[in-house]
Length: 104
Figure 1 (cartoon, rainbow, N blue to C red):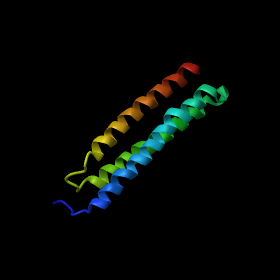
Figure 2: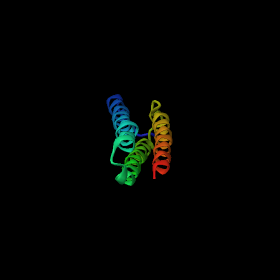
Figure 3: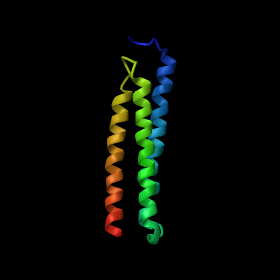
Figure 4: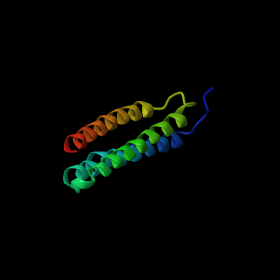
């Protein structure tokens, strides 16, 4: 059974995950990577923990999108975008963790 939802709500629902995911993805790609490259190498393991925490937030945002869209028949591509961001973030996470592994 599809829940009747207004266009305005769908529009907001689409914008929110984009903003959240993009912010978190940027943090993973730039801030955490910068910590690994330029931060105190004696505490590089902290960069690894930060990377995992940001990825956990991204995965949590993905789960929120899934649960919010479970009863919506036409999500206008929101779920597809959420899956893509999750996959890209996982790749970034693995790159960062490999880099940390090499430096330890």
